[in-house]
Image (cartoon, rainbow, N blue to C red; front, side, top):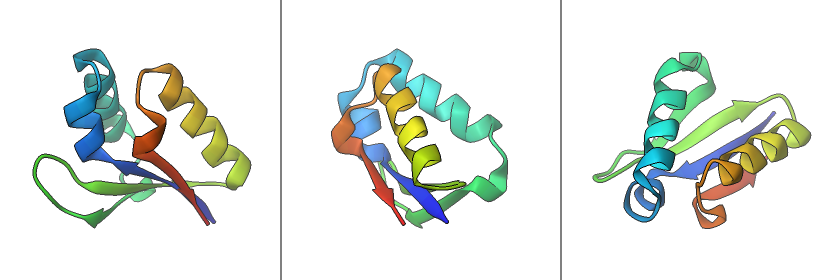
Length: 78
């Protein structure tokens, strides 16, 4: 199974308020089993979002980039 790793520090500090709010809502409304906190920190966690496969992770990464999340905050892991 693949995952998309999201660095919330970058999201919270270097994104627009709209992009950071979109991520917070996405994380809060998504199925809890998809989100795993790898490292908890302030001002944000390192979170992995479970995906079906690499293509699904790439789709999610591209969606997040379109929403304003910097590419540097996102990493696909297998």
